[in-house]
Amino acid sequence: MELFDRLSNLQTISQSEELNIRLEILLTDFLVCARAGSSSADIDSVGARLAINSNYHDADDIDWSVMTHPGSIIWAALIDSLIRLPENSKNFRVSAYAGYRTSATSAHFFGTSHRKNWHVTTTAGTLAATSAACAYRNLSASMHIGALENAAANMGGIAVADRRTGAAVFNRSAATTLGLLAATSDQPSAQNIWEGERGLKNLFSIAGEDSQTYDGISTAGLRLFPYSGFIQSQNLAITQLAKKLSGDLVSIELGLHSVTVELLNGSVGGSYWDFKHGAASAWQIKDVTQCVEAKTEVLEKISAKAIDIPISGAEVTVTTSNGSDSVRIDVAPGNDFGSSQEKHWREAKWQRLVGGDYLEAENFAHLLLNNQADKNAIKSLQEFLLS
Image (cartoon, rainbow, N blue to C red; front, side):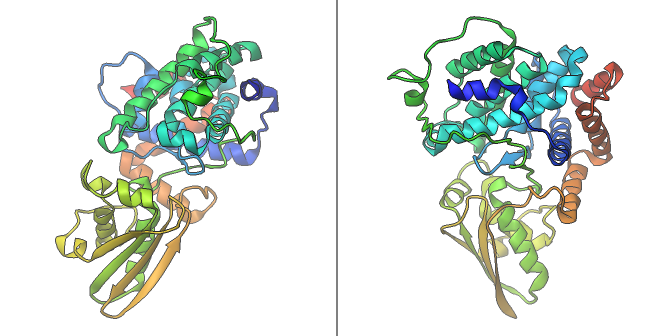
């Protein structure tokens, strides 16, 4: 398959200083999330455990262009590989490039029809973990292709695995584990897996229309605020209006994507998965980096409707006794890594999750991505994440 030929060719990876800087921030965010979610779960696999821990607070990175959470799988597979084979640490950065490229390129290739039926974080993520692990191990292109074929023939993760119940957390762990297994098993790969009634394109509703290659790093962003990713824009807009408008609250009118209205209706998963609770919290505290318990008198003044807007966006109109104003945000914050405002927000997130330990995470990320991590640093990283 031409897709796997492209993804296995590491010579076509184009690194840049801008993307390297982004990778450091993405890795720091993963390390913070994984440490914050650290548990005593009885899981032998480092990769599987890190994938679960990094999503524990539902704060891992997101690529809104294809609706995936690539980092919780890619970095988990890479750190597992790093701990097993510290002598290959010089391959860490190019392996991260390979993982993000495979995640984004595969997700675009699979298309929207696939995403309706399958959890694309898991399917594209399985291939991403495979590519990252293969690159780290210096496997030949033919071995890399064989590993991708084995992973593709066994990937899964149906879309009914409801993220509101936490079911999608296991999917990340499964994707990481399968990717690592595919990269290390050296077993014969399945043949002719794409076409026909029993082929991947048919079984996985794969469109196969987008043949571009995407780096995946430039489109990966952070979920900055302590709310569901679907209402990051909503709560930022409300916070801006709360600081601007005076007087008693009369109403908050929300315009959201239909998926957000349906998914975050509060019927499953508690108040975290209720856009009204998120909106009320944002109005009450007027600080998007924090959340509080919603008050009934505020909840009663919130209404919502589905509008034509990107899934990460929101249109908000607030009316008070002194006037009314509106804000529309089409793209959720979290992707502009050079912004001083977003730097403040992400440091507030990291501080909230692990306190001052985020400075250690930044240091580990810098060492790993600049080929400066010796065996002692790798051992310290393992203790930082898993002790």
